[in-house]
Picture 1: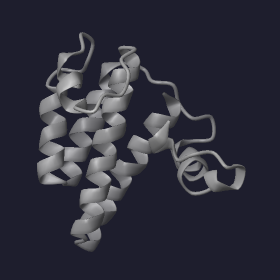
Picture 2: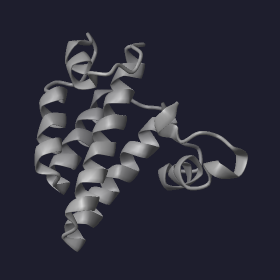
Picture 3: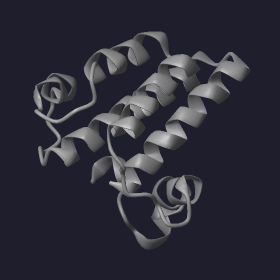
Length: 126
Protein backbone atom coordinates (compact mmCIF):
# COMPACT_ATOMS: atom_id res chain seq x y z
CA UNK A 1 0.00 0.00 0.00
CA UNK A 2 2.88 2.39 0.72
CA UNK A 3 4.14 1.83 -2.81
CA UNK A 4 0.71 2.51 -4.32
CA UNK A 5 0.38 5.67 -2.21
CA UNK A 6 3.79 6.88 -3.40
CA UNK A 7 2.68 6.39 -7.01
CA UNK A 8 -0.52 8.34 -6.37
CA UNK A 9 1.38 11.17 -4.69
CA UNK A 10 3.85 11.35 -7.58
CA UNK A 11 0.99 11.41 -10.07
CA UNK A 12 -0.63 14.27 -8.19
CA UNK A 13 2.63 16.19 -8.43
CA UNK A 14 2.80 15.48 -12.16
CA UNK A 15 -0.76 16.80 -12.66
CA UNK A 16 0.46 20.09 -11.18
CA UNK A 17 3.53 20.08 -13.41
CA UNK A 18 1.33 19.46 -16.45
CA UNK A 19 -0.79 22.49 -15.58
CA UNK A 20 2.32 24.68 -15.16
CA UNK A 21 3.60 23.60 -18.57
CA UNK A 22 0.19 23.53 -20.30
CA UNK A 23 1.02 19.96 -21.33
CA UNK A 24 -2.12 17.96 -22.18
CA UNK A 25 -0.25 14.70 -22.69
CA UNK A 26 1.35 14.87 -19.24
CA UNK A 27 -1.98 15.89 -17.69
CA UNK A 28 -3.69 12.84 -19.18
CA UNK A 29 -0.91 10.47 -18.20
CA UNK A 30 -0.69 11.79 -14.66
CA UNK A 31 -4.46 11.89 -14.10
CA UNK A 32 -4.73 8.29 -15.32
CA UNK A 33 -1.93 7.16 -13.00
CA UNK A 34 -3.46 8.95 -10.05
CA UNK A 35 -6.82 7.33 -10.77
CA UNK A 36 -5.17 3.92 -11.14
CA UNK A 37 -3.20 4.00 -7.91
CA UNK A 38 -5.87 5.76 -5.84
CA UNK A 39 -8.31 3.06 -6.85
CA UNK A 40 -5.77 0.30 -6.25
CA UNK A 41 -5.31 1.61 -2.70
CA UNK A 42 -9.04 1.44 -2.02
CA UNK A 43 -9.26 -2.02 -3.57
CA UNK A 44 -6.29 -3.27 -1.55
CA UNK A 45 -7.82 -1.83 1.62
CA UNK A 46 -10.96 -3.85 0.85
CA UNK A 47 -8.90 -6.92 -0.09
CA UNK A 48 -10.33 -6.94 -3.61
CA UNK A 49 -8.16 -7.93 -6.55
CA UNK A 50 -7.52 -5.42 -9.31
CA UNK A 51 -10.36 -5.96 -11.82
CA UNK A 52 -10.68 -5.01 -15.46
CA UNK A 53 -13.57 -2.60 -14.78
CA UNK A 54 -11.83 -0.95 -11.87
CA UNK A 55 -13.98 2.11 -11.25
CA UNK A 56 -17.22 0.14 -11.17
CA UNK A 57 -15.70 -2.27 -8.66
CA UNK A 58 -14.34 0.59 -6.53
CA UNK A 59 -17.83 2.12 -6.43
CA UNK A 60 -19.17 -1.19 -5.07
CA UNK A 61 -16.63 -1.97 -2.33
CA UNK A 62 -18.02 -1.48 1.17
CA UNK A 63 -15.24 0.64 2.66
CA UNK A 64 -14.24 3.66 0.56
CA UNK A 65 -14.10 7.43 0.88
CA UNK A 66 -17.38 9.28 0.34
CA UNK A 67 -17.99 10.19 -3.32
CA UNK A 68 -14.68 8.54 -4.23
CA UNK A 69 -15.80 7.15 -7.60
CA UNK A 70 -17.27 10.54 -8.53
CA UNK A 71 -14.01 12.29 -7.61
CA UNK A 72 -12.00 9.86 -9.74
CA UNK A 73 -14.38 10.34 -12.67
CA UNK A 74 -14.02 14.12 -12.34
CA UNK A 75 -10.22 13.75 -12.31
CA UNK A 76 -10.34 11.68 -15.50
CA UNK A 77 -12.38 14.37 -17.23
CA UNK A 78 -10.85 17.56 -15.82
CA UNK A 79 -7.19 16.53 -15.36
CA UNK A 80 -6.59 19.57 -13.16
CA UNK A 81 -4.59 20.11 -9.98
CA UNK A 82 -7.86 20.82 -8.12
CA UNK A 83 -9.37 17.51 -9.23
CA UNK A 84 -6.15 15.67 -8.31
CA UNK A 85 -6.09 17.31 -4.90
CA UNK A 86 -9.73 16.34 -4.29
CA UNK A 87 -8.91 12.67 -4.92
CA UNK A 88 -5.82 12.75 -2.69
CA UNK A 89 -7.53 14.65 0.14
CA UNK A 90 -10.37 12.15 0.02
CA UNK A 91 -7.89 9.27 0.29
CA UNK A 92 -5.80 10.84 3.04
CA UNK A 93 -8.80 11.78 5.18
CA UNK A 94 -10.33 8.34 4.75
CA UNK A 95 -7.69 6.48 6.75
CA UNK A 96 -4.05 6.47 7.70
CA UNK A 97 -2.14 4.76 4.92
CA UNK A 98 1.29 3.14 5.24
CA UNK A 99 4.00 5.58 4.17
CA UNK A 100 7.16 4.82 2.21
CA UNK A 101 10.05 5.05 4.71
CA UNK A 102 12.20 7.23 2.45
CA UNK A 103 9.30 9.39 1.21
CA UNK A 104 7.05 9.19 -1.81
CA UNK A 105 9.53 10.67 -4.28
CA UNK A 106 12.24 8.13 -3.45
CA UNK A 107 9.75 5.24 -3.53
CA UNK A 108 8.43 6.46 -6.88
CA UNK A 109 11.97 6.58 -8.25
CA UNK A 110 12.73 3.06 -7.01
CA UNK A 111 9.50 1.60 -8.40
CA UNK A 112 9.25 3.50 -11.68
CA UNK A 113 12.70 4.63 -12.71
CA UNK A 114 15.25 2.31 -11.14
CA UNK A 115 13.26 -0.94 -11.05
CA UNK A 116 15.05 -2.22 -14.16
CA UNK A 117 18.30 -2.46 -12.17
CA UNK A 118 17.07 -5.50 -10.24
CA UNK A 119 14.77 -6.86 -12.93
CA UNK A 120 11.57 -6.13 -11.01
CA UNK A 121 8.52 -5.40 -13.16
CA UNK A 122 7.01 -1.92 -13.04
CA UNK A 123 4.73 -1.27 -10.06
CA UNK A 124 1.85 -1.01 -12.56
CA UNK A 125 2.19 -4.73 -13.27
CA UNK A 126 2.16 -5.94 -9.65
